[in-house]
Image (tube, rainbow, N blue to C red):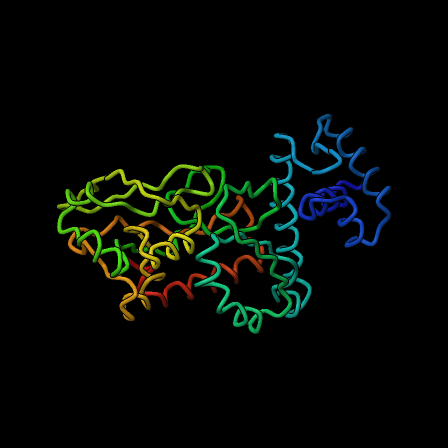
Length: 303
């Protein structure tokens, strides 16, 4: 068995999340991939993939082996490019990127053509989701995360710090009054924004004398999307805590009014998350450089 070819086949199957799709990209019959995987699993003495009629998933051993294969193949690619001439260093190939919905729609995708112009041979496969994505299981090369990172098996690179504020529509403030202190919030309702990844409502917290003070809020609508949170706030359904980048134009137009400006919400880190060893890939490296430079141009992401 050609172990290098078996590794490449295994990685391609995981990244395509399908034997059939992987067979198409490799221009091989599906039966050939099935045989390769059977031989590889027999050689390793463990099951790497769980297959059902609806989905393909990695076992715990498969997830570990996949990560090692990616590192090994990236190292081989890096070593070979040294001897293949200047064109071999050009970033190329498929790069799978996972972005939070609101950040992707409002901050990244409006500029994605500039990345394509700079690196035309990199094929971006972008998913927009706020759910908890297993990078290894779903074959994601790099993910953008807002908030504290939880997965210690991945590499995290801080590229920004997202600023937030508390705001409301003038119609809401006219009917319920303007909160002057944090204690006044007990008389108000909010748009409840909960995490699409964990299902838990995001804490409302304020920086008071350098310390974070948490406040429990409730309201008529619970939303798991940042843009939907903003949409409800614009309709006067309650107070909202939003990213400053989201509401800047609405503050300027008067559609929203900032309240409790003396006690801003705690900023949240913005990070790139990727499996160990993956940054050796030139396509991932240039994407990381590009999005880092992009975010440096947003004052609201450098709080």
